[in-house]
Image (tube, rainbow, N blue to C red; front, top):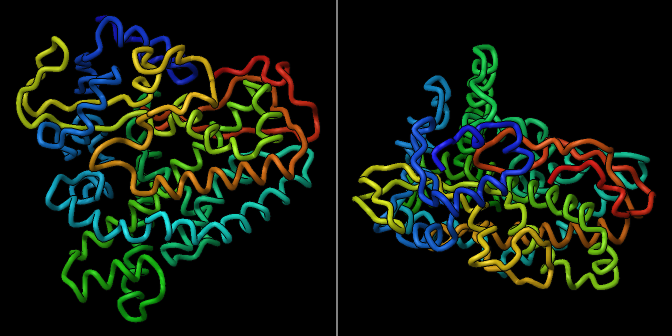
Length: 413
């Protein structure tokens, strides 16, 4: 496959899986000069890359230089160079050890009561409406509130947090360059986000509390385990990563129910199946589409020679649909128990995965128990125009109508 036009078409947002299939079959390791990347789509290659930090660096600086409008580098330099996701050992090992404490199974499980309280409040509120935007009313606010409370920042500012988070990630779009006015707005938004956390960190230095941000500040002050820049980048990363993946998981999970109406009665009858349902959602529509790695030296993937310092777009979404790993990958099957790669693999496996899984389970338990059957407005789904994430901009549902195959007629997966 030498024609890469499909990679940048509107149809790619709506349904990338036929393109992924052609890539896996014809060019599983493809150099795409337009974006300065090599795209990798087969499961075995993707898994190998993610579990081999000695061959493939997580440093994102070269990738950001290639992909982003240079005006959009302001506010992301720190995330590109010193955040947990962009570090290699030994720095990665040091930071990971510090933050792991907050996301152990026991620590995460202790949050369930509060998460359920929040989920019930939000679900009860939307259940009183004849129609509602699932993203705005549930999928966005719940994880933002949870990670805000965990960090010890004011969850009442969740609308700002969501805007800041979106703007921090903006830059790898599928729909072309941003105009000057939009770039100016994004840069100003990032400055606000960074200034907010600077102020929060300074406050924690003067008056530490019982929260994760205070723990990070103490690690800087008492143990010399973090630099001041690392405290800031860790706070920013947790705030962004702590809501984006779960928000997309919730929205994509509801789409799965709408497009596979036989699943809903099974989950209502046996809520214990919800965790298996979520794992299949993670495989079927991965909230994270692509991870980025850089080759430390020349490597061979399959029969393709990739040079040193090549930027790899590691397409976990394509790998999750590889028929060599998942028979009939287009089929949604909650009995599958998939070994998906949506939370990554190896040393960079998502530290927040237990929290995301818990939030997803509680949300669907409450949603299915407290809201009657629902349908969505007709028309195509509105996917956010991102090359790295797969999530909905909005998902307007109508309450109280029977869920059937007709409910999703005209939808685009």
